[in-house]
Image: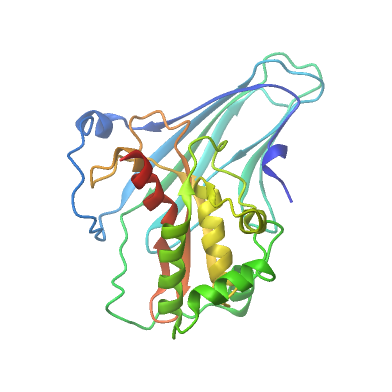
Length: 293
């Protein structure tokens, strides 16, 4: 399985990601003060992400793996086409069999000067909302989908201290909605956003619980949330991507501030509830607003 540190090998990297068109940011340069957080299902919108990478000091045989949109949910996100221009000797789309993440894998000839690539990825998305006061009959998960989304991983175990902590949190709770609500509230009350954490964090949740240090960024806090939920046998998953629009509720820290989204990476959660299907959740963003706004 490809790890984050394996994404680039053989040199230092200069990379930018931009979002087209940029007019929407010019129109929203001064977002209003935060308003009541009440998301609604919105219209479908198309986006084009342009990622430019140049290896500044290539050494030996250089390779790079650039993530592309591969996650899909028919309710709110549909990945589109990818195209690229590069001086690499070989370039092809590859998929990690364990996570399903798709990447553009590039290989340059040994000694190649100024390795570079420009990748254009398209996607269609819309605002999404789930009314937890109105149960329904969602499409059931397949056995394989349930297995994948309740499984333990190296960084998100579901036994030991994780299960013990989860059991304490949900004690006395009934259905999956009540249990997930309790875990969400526990994350918000007991964790904190640490601005000094590098990147999005690494999400080593057992180490967090054992040390008692429950600080971090989105990958840490959402991984902890997901692990606690999965340990109850409830399907949950983390979704990695980019913030591509300003927050419509006026939170500067929860949206892209310009059409340059190089540092707009984010991770959030989705939980499958028996009466609602996949529901987006993000306790890490609650902690971010508490710290920054």
